[in-house]
Each structure stands twice: as structure tokens, then as C-alpha cells.
Image (cartoon, rainbow, N blue to C red; front, side, top):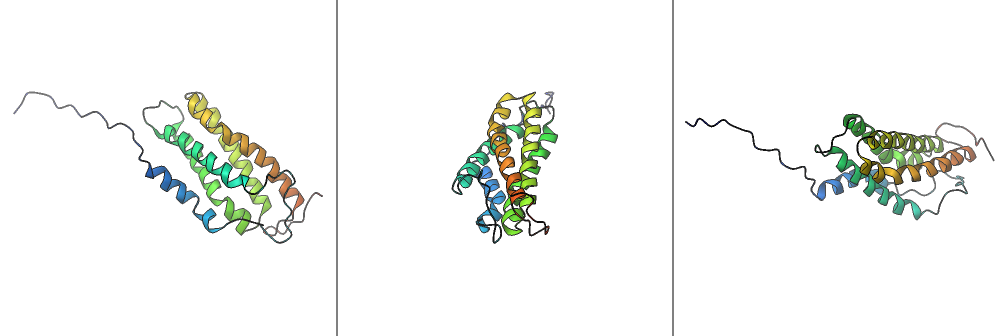
Length: 176
């Protein structure tokens, strides 16, 4: 036997394989791949503030890349983040909101839920940026496009909910 004391090997470096974020992206977009969007219900009038339809897949793909990039940095144990657990939980909520948006808007036809989902995504992302910005400005900067887009989308979503009836809740259009 040896008199040498045992020391544990150093932890393996944090590593994400290329397929892991891709698989995650496919999972969160699964319903969107099935539900192709279009008009949420017969007689729906899009807000005049709304960009053309082709803008949404391009913008959201880009935003997904930024959010996943920030999330990978968030879960890296080498980064010292005070609110890591809370941030991971809040990011999980934004991904659930994102993954279910097509369901509530296009499948259920609810402009009220679509607006609530969009505003919630904006608020939660704003909180995440404020929390992570205390410790890691790079993650906050990576997520900044998310609040810019969802802030704008919140205005559009609220306007859309006001000018359209909501068949899910049986409410009439409140404005216009």
C-alpha cells in the first residue's frame, strides 16, 4: 500500500455537444411544426402594427439561438451567478410559454391568452436580464434582443386582443 493520500481528479470541463441545443430546439418547437399558424379563427383581423408573417419564423429562430446561447452560459458551473437556480426556473417558464404559444393562439384561437403569454415572456425576460446582469453582463447582453422583440410584440398582442373577439373566452372585441 502507498502512503500517498487520494485526491479526486479535477472535474471535467463544462461541455455542451452540438446536438443537445439542437434537440432542445426541436422539442420546444414541436407543436409549432405541427400547428403551422395562419389565421387563429375565422374573421380574425391582425393588428396593423403586426409585421408580415415571414418575419416571425426568422425573428424567433434568431431569438431562440440567442436564448439558448445565454442559457448554456447560465448553466455553466464555472460562472459565478448568485441567482442561478431562480434564473434557470424563470428561463424554463419562458421556454414553456414559447412552446405553447402556437397552441393558445392558433389552435385555441385566443388572442387574450396570446397577449398574456407575450407580456409574460417580456416581463420574465426583463427580470432575468436584471438578475443576471448583476453577475454576468455578457448573458444579459445576449438576452437583450428578447426583451426588445417581446416588448414590441406585447404592444402588438395587446392591440390584437383589443380589436378581436376571443372565441375561447367568448368575449367580443373591446376596441375598434
